[in-house]
Every structure is written in structure tokens, then in C-alpha cells.
Length: 517
Image (cartoon, rainbow, N blue to C red; front, side):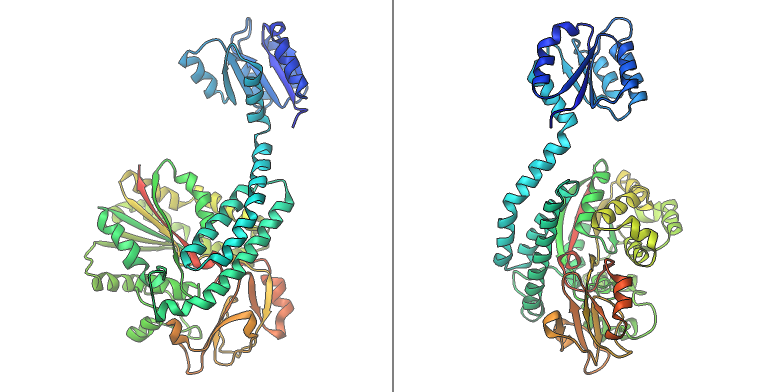
């Protein structure tokens, strides 16, 4: 960590020789000068890792020297040293973007700590984070075998993504590879858990049965609306925990997080099934039976999510909820702008529901457009792109306006998404559904060990287009390909983000309640 080049500027620099010798003994290359003019010349001539600058110097003061240094080297951290504790001087220094502020007399260890904080902090954090993860690796892996409930898997999922976020800037490729391996192992075990327990959640629900798509609004949304005078519910398609963690700091000044919870998306983790179930408060099978004219199966032509508002109003009526409802779906930029212009429509409602399809559109665009695929090459890049979009989106502006008006905000999704890279061969006829993560049809050919097959869809409360319909679901990072076009599909869809199958990323969906500050 040593070897950093330090410039120390002080009109009494001779009195600081013990400090300078101490730093040199720690391996630092320390250069000195006793006035602001020489400091500017030195900074212009060479690159320093850090500048220590005295605030009170004759001729050109530290506060006058500072902006000149920042103009020449805007990224070089500057530590200001002063005898004065006057607040206005501190304000000026902080306003000029100093890295740290020390009050004379300073001791060598104090200076060393400040240097480490401003020059080596990332390296120190990375080293410690890497060491912490390596020590916890075994405990996390052993927790897979102990996980008996959906709540247990939520905790594992949170831990893994906490580590992924912590290690995202690690310079150690080995530890990132270990984490990737562990996430893969976790998803394999999660798939086994779902295969063993999923049908039981419908047949014999108990206290461990999670909140699922069909009872999300009744169990988690309506109680929030009942308690808050104004509530706006944002359903962001394809929204995952890691994306929430990326945008959360952007919302920090507007809202406090009252609830960070999760629910389980139904299978298939696809918009047609999961979102309709959310708004109807019914399973897809029940929707098909009760409202057959409003449900289209995979092999039927037409929009599959055209009746969400109707479903929601029916659910409100069945639960005795008489809220004044506003519903909108944002699929284009101009729709968001129009909604901002008509913010009173949202504000005047008791319960506003706004569906945002941007992340789903982005996922599909990434598949189809090479430049977006290059911009979002991996999950870390996709997260970064999500934050960039959010910071400049109509959605953020809308949330700002609602925060000003005292609205409680709910954010969730109908399902998540996962990056796929393992092709699995299946066979099907022309009537087979086209989704890469699940298939439904009557003549499916597959390896039982490679999929979760539901031969009696009614057990999973799924409709069927004919008497012999079967559903199959892909695990982990798998995606389905046909034998006659395997190479074409692999080239086109490998490393794309897909949904419809079984993974923690798709099924463990964040549910967030934010209160305005």
C-alpha cells in the first residue's frame, strides 16, 4: 500500500520534519514546499496521489491555492490543515471539495489515517471484504442443506446478493468466480426445493407457505393502502433485488424504507401469468374458469395482459375496498411525461397503480440489439444501466412529485429475470409455447432430470389448452432449444436475460414500502 506520492505544503514545513520522516518510514514518497505558488508549479509538473495543504500561509493562502490545484488536478484528493476551527472556514474548505480536514497540531498517526482513508480506502475495503466473504463461504454453503422454507431461501438470496454488491468492485477475479460458483450452487438447490414444495403450497398450504402472486395485493398491498391516506403502487416489470439496491441511494433523500420484504412469483415467472394473477387476486386457472373471455392461452393470438385494471377493480370489489382508483401503464417515454403533467390524477386518487415496462423492454432490447448487449454485458453492467436509466427517468420525477405530496410508495414486480447460458434440448410441435424458460404443449419431449415437469397443470392452478397439456420449467441458468435449430438459438440467446423458469432471481421478488420524508 505504500509508495504513494504525497505533496505537503506548509509555511512552517521545517517544523514538520518528524512527521515527514514518519511517513517516509511507512514507505511514502513525500515532497514538500512552503508556499502556494510553488505548490501550484509542482502539481502542474507532476502527478501526486494526495496533497496536504496548510490553510494559513503568507502570500497565497491555502483556500486560495486549493481551487488552483483542483483546476490542474481535479481528481487529486486534498487534505486541509488549519489552526482555526471557525465554521465559515470549514464551510469554504468543504465547499471546495477537500477530501479531509485536520486541526493543528496534528500528530503523525492522525495524518497517516487520513492518507489511508483517501488513498488506500478502496484497496483496504476490497481486501477486508474479500477476506470476510472467504471466511463466510462455508457457512453460506452449509445453509443450503438447512433451508426448509421459502423464508430460509430469501435469507440466502439476500446474503448472496449482499456479497455480490460488496464484491462488485473487487480486483480479485478469483473471489468473484467463487461467488458465481456459489450462486450457481444455490440456484440448483433452490430448484430442488421448488420441485419438492411448489405443488404443496396449493394443495395443503401451511404457515410456511409464502405470499404468492395471486394473494399479493390482498395480503400485502391492501393493508398498506388502508393505513395510508394516499398510496401509489409501482409494478416495475423484471425488477430484482440487486436493481433495488442500485436505485435505493437515489431515493434516500425522498423516502424512508419502511418495509423491505419479498414474495414468491408463481410459475411460469412470465408476465401473462404472474401479473394477471397479481391484479386478479386469482390463479391463472381460476381466471380462465371465472373469466374465460379475459384469458388467452399461450397458443392463442392477442394481447395477454389487456385487462389488468378490470381484474384489479373486480378484486377490490370482492374484498370490499371502495378506494378511489387510478390505473396507468407506462410503456413509452411520452406516456411517462403525460402522467407527470397530469400528476393531480394520481394525487387525487386514494390508490394509484402504475405499471412500468421499461426493464422488460430493456431486457428484450439487450437480446435483439448488439450495442445494448455490449453496454450491459453482465449483471453488474445491467445493474449500472438500470441505475442510469432510473436517475434520468420519468419514474424518478414522478416519485419526487409524490414524495412532495405525502404519498406512500409501494414498489414491486411481477417476476425477476436471470442471465442464461446453458442450452437444454426439448422437442415440441407447432402449438408449443415459444418462451425460452418454460414450455407448454401436448407433445413435449424432454429429459425428466433437466426440467421441472407438471403433467397435471391443474395441480399448479394452471390452465391447459388441451386435455394432455404439460408444462415444463427450466432451472437455474438453463434455456430451452430445439434439436433442429440448436446452434442458431445458442448464438442468439446465450448470455441474455430471460424469465419464465425457476431461479431465485425470478421467483424471489422484492416488495418495498417507502414513506415520504
